Length: 486
Image 1: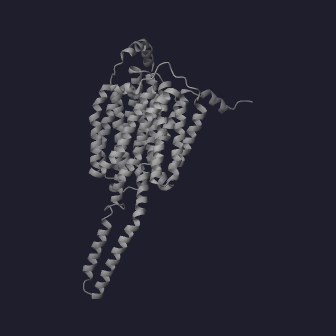
Image 2 (image 1 turned 90 degrees about the vertical axis):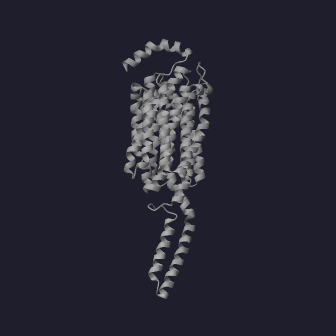
Image 3 (image 1 turned 135 degrees about the horizontal axis):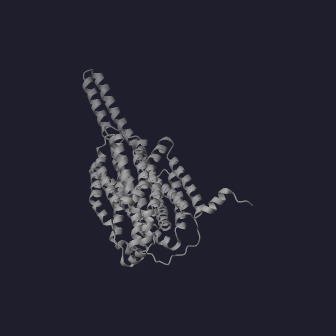
């Protein structure tokens, strides 16, 4: 029988670098969209649950107060002497009953919103906590069985957690789905980035490929928020998760058709242990950049929507729309600086990105409306794209220059650093915002980025270890020729 054209194309392209790059791009897109799609949904969803539970008590209190006031007014009419005095008392009592539980300018109960800071922070951070625990295990698994099987296992877990999110109305079931998502995210991210580092061994091409793949991470990380808010507000809670489940199925089908699930044969070079990698100061500094930058992003993701509800009286769809400028520029900058960072110096690109992040965080609370947040959020997208496009290739370069060219461990450490930031940011940010307020929280986060950024100078020219110098000196003419042509 004649072979159909699509089947022939799949057979020819199976295992090619371009197809693997597409698979990793879509996997990171789905994972990070699921991560951020709940950010604008959860505050409003929890508020409605809490307000529904407490509505009976509030209604009884208001009804009781109204009956007492009405009785006083009737009594005054009967006496026909103190109508004006009792009317003023009625207005005073009515104002007190309405102003006590509610914000003076918004139709939201401030006490419930402030209590939600901790709940939202815990729900957002639990994914990163689970991922932090699973990342080292996934790094060891990829060194033993390869990258294809863990990547496909990550798709299955993410698909299941997406369906749980779609059909549950309980906070604790969402908490469970978020925890399950952490394990799937670890498998997808560590396996995907490690696979790219392996199939793109040359430094320039690796940086370019990492920039494209991180475009999926960038697009998912912040596009999920406006997508989730718009779908939740106009279609319903389950709609964004069902769309993500369909997208995950497409990625799973693509993985089945394109990836090779052959028996993995470990290479002759033994992988570097986690202890040796963590003792390397350059790897620690690079991982610290990830940790600080994503800690700041986690703080904004968990506290900005609640601050907008409480201060700017924003509607549900505006809670996610505010992240749209950051998403667009994050996507553009991860691809743009994947090339520019190589030419200008990746260490310098990361340093400038950290400075921009710190300054912008300090300026965020000065916004008085939604339009005032567009500029700061756009700058956050640019800065985050600069940092991601710079540090990811640096981690692979550090493994090549200072250790062995086995990338599961080094990218497990980088993802663990991201998880620490994502865990501490929402968890501590929500508690700090409740105690000292959102403006001071932004001031602390921005100052932390500015204080840490000088350490990026250490990544300018990391020295190679002695046993790697001979290998690098032999490869030097070939590498110089390759860089000159490009």
